[in-house]
Length: 98
Image (cartoon, rainbow, N blue to C red; front, side, top):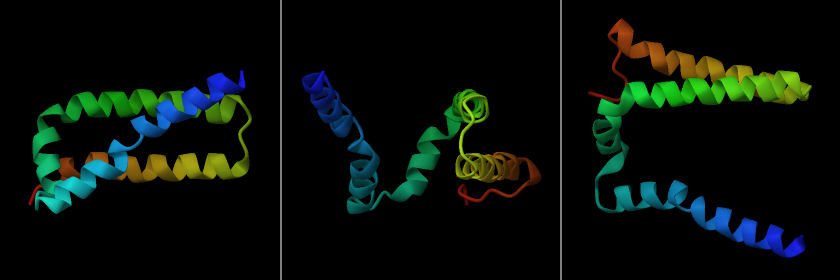
């Protein structure tokens, strides 16, 4: 069992590397994160659907499994911030696309 835990940790450690490496290489080559927004903007609706599904699963796990107060507050705060960024473009406020 310990060997499986070690192998799983190594695999997920390498899978999480693009989280830090991709922004580094974007800024290294002068692309920045706004170019990533232009690339991903056609897929906005698909990514929003994936986000809603993720928040639904997170809601179930946080409130069904009796998460701590910190988990509930953090979850509700992240929902509020995400909702604000989802509805901003519909009010004519393009935060990232200018």
